[in-house]
Figure 1 (spheres, rainbow, N blue to C red):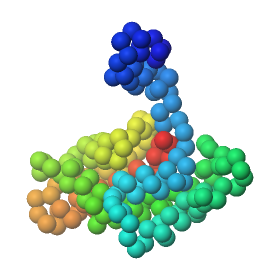
Figure 2: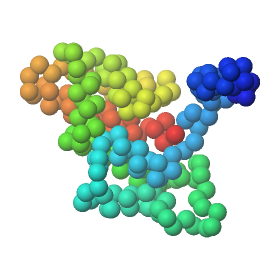
Figure 3: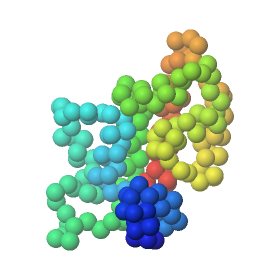
Length: 193
């Protein structure tokens, strides 16, 4: 399919990429692979913009992938690490969720502040459904099952709509966004790349 698109478009890579990204085989492969610990740590750190440049504390953060089962530059055998569902067991899953939750729950991190500001831009309040969908979009975008989305919406509904007219409401809004991000990184879907 791709080679045909390549030749039929007179060697235009834009056309090939369009065919690739709209193909069923590409869509099936998306979110089908469990993130390795290194991918999880790097992705979360990039999301929250914790280390835009090297600084103290970065070395300790690199150990997080080791706690999840992947010690960088030290594979268990010469063939490297096995990939896939082997990355998730009861112990490593707890480490994965705890690390991601700790990072996205830190409201002082620039990436988390960006998410909070983007969600609040141009609005005076945010219904629970929009809070969930906005967080899913800004954390990925992350596609979740309808059941997961409904669970997240139900949690957001219990706390009610959020507004940010006063400084107290702004602090409450930031806290609610942080909580929602923490719930999202604990979902099954967040574990996949």
